Length: 304
Image (cartoon, rainbow, N blue to C red; front, side, top):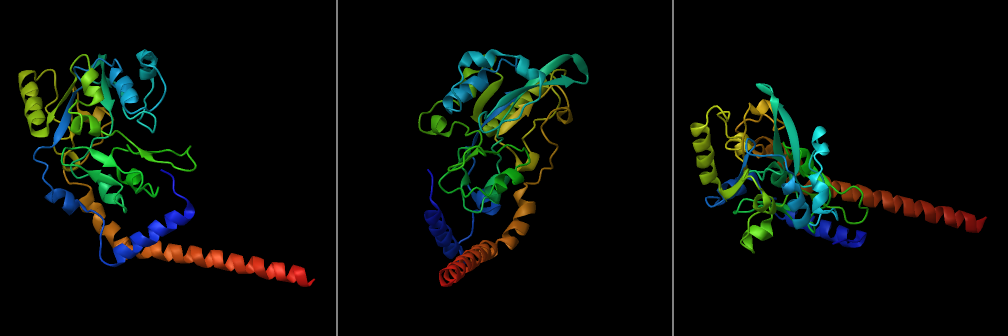
């Protein structure tokens, strides 16, 4: 949905007034107090992944990202170069080399991790991003003002911006197929199509138990680490790997939720929405000055 300048300024003024009256953005504390006991997630077994890219094709179709046919995703030459999710590809498969087994490369699916305490949600000053009890972090384009703080805050560098759209750009990322898993009772599209069962959908606590069982049963196959169990406060997407995760593109993170470290600074800067209000005032003053300048110049031209 696009919004003209007058409507935007009206919404901004309303939001500013509401915050001045004491309303605050959703914080990490709000997320922490929510009930996520029934939160869902996906276990990604990179040992089982065969790099078929069917998950990419299913995601593309489910989210109507491009008009590309499923056959175009059968091209494996793209695995020769490292790729990242973007506004037209919510998930991608990359190939990595295992230092312990250089002759046996493995593939890994990457997408939004849907963190338990998401930094993107905490960074959004208008509530355009929201963590749901079911697990997904979802996005409301109507609320978004395009500040892109979510992109800066995300430790996984996932949110992507539609820079090519001049009128109604959005922040795009994996939706965790929110409508499919809640309203339709289906599996996420990527999980449903995976032919080798490298993706398992279920309750997050049960997925962690499953991952531990696989590690115990095949210690020579998996590194003893379930990525996402604790990183950055935990994520909805969990990973098993044949090698140390330092060899993958998943970042090394502490167990501390990122919002705990950033919100004090952010809320201090944006307390009572003062900086944005000052910006609006400055812009108004500039516009007023320019208008008066043009009027004075026109009067001089008429008199001469």
